[in-house]
Length: 130
Image (tube, rainbow, N blue to C red; front, top):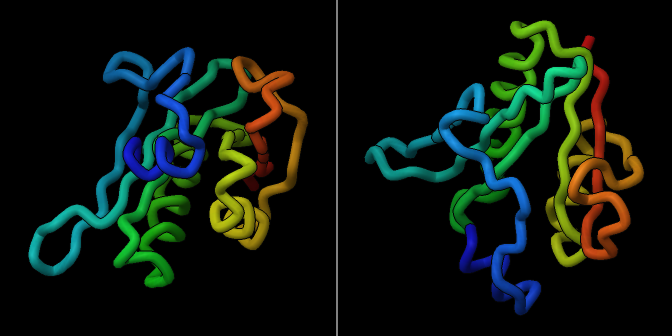
């Protein structure tokens, strides 16, 4: 993931609050029939009725197979079980595939939040959980 993002943005990872084992509630890994990892995603509970989706990634050869949707649904379900009313996430302007994916999955654009407020490369989204 970091290699792909560095190539798209020509920048090192600038995340100010990277997820850690102490801050992530769940980290999901999808695997193919041979046991190789094909995708991942994490959920950080923010404590204000929201959760943040982090580190969503699917290897290029598994894109378009439903892996990302299954990971996303798993993270949303985990957030619901913890009483979270909504989820937020940040992707980037040079990730149009991710932007299309989240919009297709019902996420709506919002202004930057937290460390993404005012960040010109960030595209932030939210989904109200029912």
